[in-house]
Amino acid sequence: MTHHSDQRAYFFKIDITIKKIRNALQKRLLDAGFDLTVDQWVLIDHIYRQKGICQNELAELTFKDPPTVTRIVDLLQKKGLVERGPVEGDRRKFRLSLTKSGKGIYQKAFPIVAEIRRKGWGDLSEADYQHFVRIMDSIYQNFTDPKAV
Image (tube, rainbow, N blue to C red; front, side, top):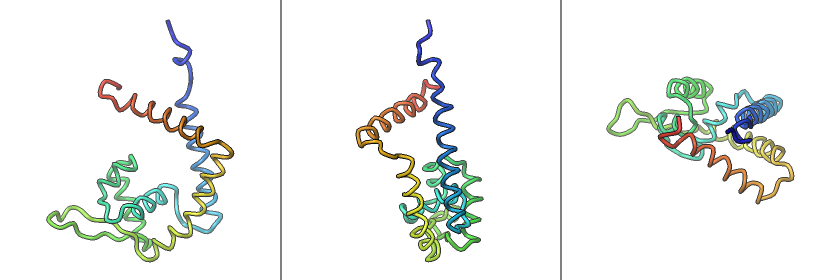
């Protein structure tokens, strides 16, 4: 016997919603004159909030594979927004930080990101947010459980 929930295409809903949000944010960043992709912004945001983060930690936090993170960090370094510093005792690892320029970009771009978040959330309430987080955490846990996949 199949349950009604077996036929709910929640994955599709999540996927198309994420794409809509990413597209809206990308458009706003470009319209505001930022030479940044959403993926570049995500890394800048994490590096800003976790000073001295290593690339492998960044990859785990952003659910991106290490080569992708390396490629994006290389680009951000070329743009003069991110710098790599040594990790004591491990020559293969680097601590990442934003340059003065990178911090400036973060300060100018963050209000645009916040505006997109507000637009997306609309007039949903705090209780709606709590339900949303609980539901998304539950779905996430269903795939995190060792027996899940």
